[in-house]
Length: 394
Image (cartoon, rainbow, N blue to C red; front, side, top):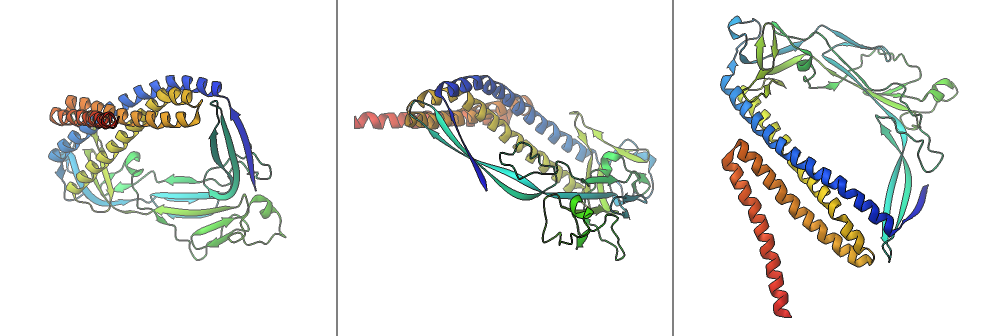
């Protein structure tokens, strides 16, 4: 079933809310400038650190012995990340020699979905119709059902056997030992292979392949309830999977210090400490790091542009709310302010990025300023052309 709720907000209330939002918009605008400037500086500093690191890196043929002459140097090595640590999940009765043991638990729960439809009324008020519908989903996080609009969709509120992760404390790399931060970055997870004689310590579970289906506590306490958990799941039932990271080959670029590795600090104060699963060429590791740096930078740029756009939209919103006294007028003004916010956000983003690059890399900075100027010029020229056409028609 679904529940429908209808609310009405007056024009005065909407106008007051939009005016209050102006302060928030200005704050987002300032935050966006800071983010964009920091992002470009971080990009350049990281890129220079990687260039410096690649030029200073020594390729060491073997990790089976420790070369004292390499102490304090940035080195590249490949070899097996190994451990003798036994990781256990006492709740389910699982034990294995591994670098990492991960339990992922999902519980079947109710989720509330909302769908809103707004209608502008003559005079500036808005009628909002909200429909609440419910569905059952498998979720790794507890879903709070206390605020659901419709009764009869209660969730337990907690997961009896939540997800957890256990990591080996002692991982060797030939003659070296790895630090916790490096162990945490070792990946290549694979599904845990249950032994043929596996017996779960939790009663009345059902296993299908690599998934253990755990009935809710009510079912486990009722011996007469023999339903198939996998095919007849109910709210509160859990499905649990296990993954492990077994010893395997890895590649490292880091500064050798004694019998372990630490980060190499470049002149830009950025750290170089690379680790990848498998045997990866040194040059390829640096290229992958550059690719990650570029991706992170572009994410930061889009985030900065989005914050600028949202901030400007909030600053200009009172204009469209004022125009909503006549709904069609308010809609037209909203389109116009949205376009202005988009163009202005793009120009501001380019200018901010350009200023940052002028500080860090002057040539590219000047090119970006020219690009921002081109956007402004083309926008102005387009508007001038429309004005000329309208004048000639008149």
